[in-house]
Length: 249
Image (cartoon, rainbow, N blue to C red; front, top):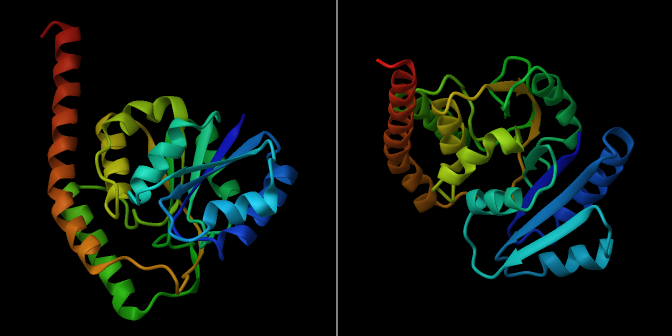
């Protein structure tokens, strides 16, 4: 089973090289049928050039770039649309969650799950380096809003370590509209609305001080929750109508 690792990257010239080294070593040893797709999300530094200079033309590596910064959600969709793997894992470029945690997810994929998300809120997760307490509190409050407004059963949708089955998730990816912070919520919500099987696993996680979310991007995410809820409800209603029509009711 081939695994595609998608890394969205924005101004990551300094952090992504050791991450790629670690990914290549681990995947070759543990999951040799793999590819790595770096999506340079309109970086203003030399992210793409630094990767090509270090790793050359390795057959397992794609470096995709576009000029305008579009956000993590767009970058993940862009990379997934170019993936050849049966499974697509996307991860933060700094490996806040170590690539080795992939092995916690694969048993659920083998059990038939379509999407598995890493959860820092899981009782068995290990947080090695916390965020600033205000940012951590803001993240927890956001996830409370996600559960209340969107009705998701998960306590952490924002961990940047998720894997999905490419074929079954294709209809979900085609429906996604959000490019930035609330992308993860939309991904999970629409997958559940389409009747797909979604689970979570504990992860090891370390905050990277260089990781930032702008005030306006974070504020926008709250307004996007209402749009996600509307789209998820519409999809569930369409599925219900389809079932009724097929049953002749």
